[in-house]
Amino acid sequence: MADFTVVPGATVSQVLADSQKQILRIVRDTYLAHEQGQSVNPDSYFLRFPDKPNARVIALPAYLGGEVDTIGIKWIASFPDNVKQGLPRASATLLLNDYATGYPLACLEAAGISAARTAASAAIAAGELLASQEAIRVSFVGAGVIARTILDYLRANGITVADILVHDLDDTSAGHLMTYATEQHGVPAASGTLDDALTRDLVIFATTSAEPYVPTSTPLQPQQVLLNISLRDLPPELLLRSNNFVDDIDHCLKAQTSPHLAEQLTGNRGFITGTLGGILQGTAAPDPGKPTVFSPFGLGILDLALGHHVLHEARARGAVVEIPDFIGESSRW
Image 1 (cartoon, helix red, strand yellow):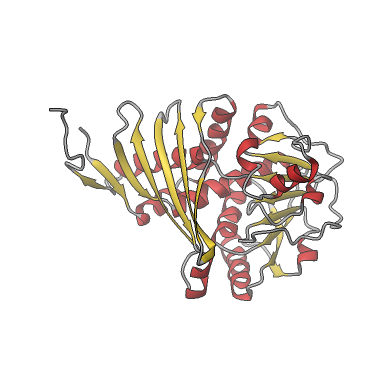
Image 2 (cartoon, helix red, strand yellow):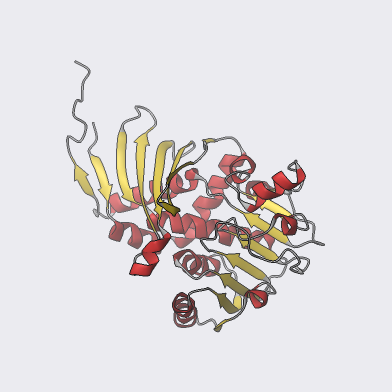
């Protein structure tokens, strides 16, 4: 029986940093596999706390077939109050199991994996949905780790950013993202109001908002693209005037997300245009006369696919911790 493997955060971070192009390919392939029924991706499970209403821990179990052929579960905590102490909001672990036997294979530090799969998903959606191939004007509403990582993956996906506008209620966070954009990407960046942010070619929401705050009357433009990464910033009425793409319809229309609110408002799902997998497969496309909103709930199969890649790369580098005899009994009798 194989040793149980632990992949620490520093190793995960290094592999991810070296693999952005591969990660984009892996995420793209995973969406296509999901669209073609090669995955099992049940509902995410939310653990909440009466005395910490803004905190949660989510379990995302999944199975992905094909070359990955692995079972896994991500266990990710989101504690927004950590930011006040200078700590990252999210922390996560990923457990991988062998599909043949069900036995555990590895445990990986997974906050970086979660951010990378989210950012790669956003960058792929932007690349598919933006009508112009010219340099685009981008705004970030929310300036945390996810926003920073999305910026990295926009460039990795070949999207040219002309300039960036940042809107965040925390001036320090906004300043950090602006400095990062200028120093790491050479992109001009400035802060601005929410109204300013909503006029950009590509608007990226990466907040911790629990309910919509964007005005219902916001005048979005045809072919404008909004990446609804944090899922709850936009009012349902705005979605009803837009193309709407999701990662998975059943997953996204729950937990009071903007698409879920739109379903409750209309009593149906007719406002959903399609899935990102459908776009990649060539079976779905936006109406160019409307703005487009992409709302990804976040699929555990993406974490699983990236974790599988990181595990193999880390082993090849000899940068893992092997734990022999992790399984207490290796035979039935």
